[in-house]
Image 1: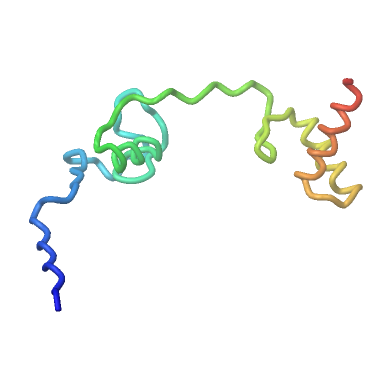
Image 2 (image 1 turned 90 degrees about the vertical axis):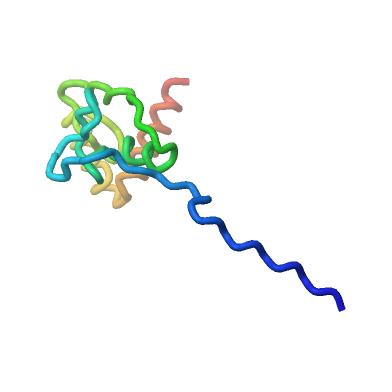
Length: 115
C-alpha cells in the first residue's frame, strides 16, 4: 500500500513578519505620521495608518479630512443644519418611525415633488 509523502517542516523565518515603526510614543493622542493630525488609534497611529502598517508594512501619506460645512451637525450619517435635524426628529416622533425611515420618506417626497 503506498504511503503519503511526509510533509516538509516549515522553515524558520519563512512567514511574513511585519516590523512596527521603531520607538512609537504610545502616550501621544495624535498620529505620529508627519502632517496626519488624526487621533491616535493604536501604536501611536490613526486607524488608516495602522491598517496600512498591518496590510503593507509601510506607511505613506493619506488624504486629509475634508473640511465640514460651517453650521451643520452630524445627524444619522448626514450633515444637516440644526433646524433641519430638529424637523426630521419631530417628523419621526409624530409619525412614530425611526430616524432612518423619516429621512427616507422625506427624501422620497422631495424626489416626487422635483419631477
